[in-house]
Amino acid sequence: MGLSVKYDYSEDVTLQGTIGAFGTVTNFGGKVAYKFKKEPMYDLYGFVSAGMYKYSDVFFDESVIGFGGGAGIEYDLSEIFDGMPLTISGEVGVSVVNFDNYSGFSAFGVGGGLHYWF
Image 1 (tube, rainbow, N blue to C red):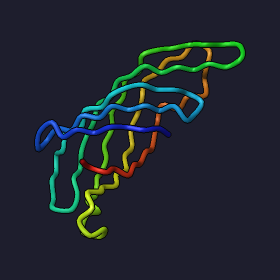
Image 2 (image 1 turned 120 degrees about the vertical axis):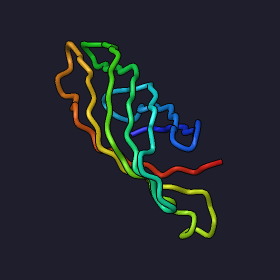
Image 3 (image 1 turned 180 degrees about the vertical axis):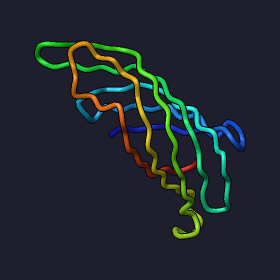
Image 4 (image 1 turned 60 degrees about the horizontal axis):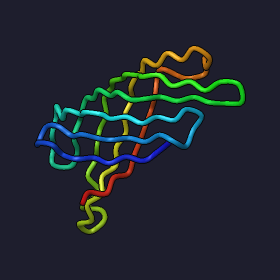
């Protein structure tokens, strides 16, 4: 779980900065998404990501760089909420993060988000 900021760089490319600080592993990273199917109410996209992953407990404090990729869908909610610029997204992906002392980090992820566009 965390927070993010998204920016439409172009019609096809979206940049996203992420902070995942509400779980066992803290992540500070970024994502580049490419919209490969654009419809009036939804977009299908693929993405690549990279970031710094940190795990710490009583005995270990470890930070490593990780990479990932996946696919998702973003649905426009503005018609439902009377023109409010909201979207909702869901995605699946894989991450390559190699901690030496923490084996509980999953390489497969499912995510979702609610986004307000300024």
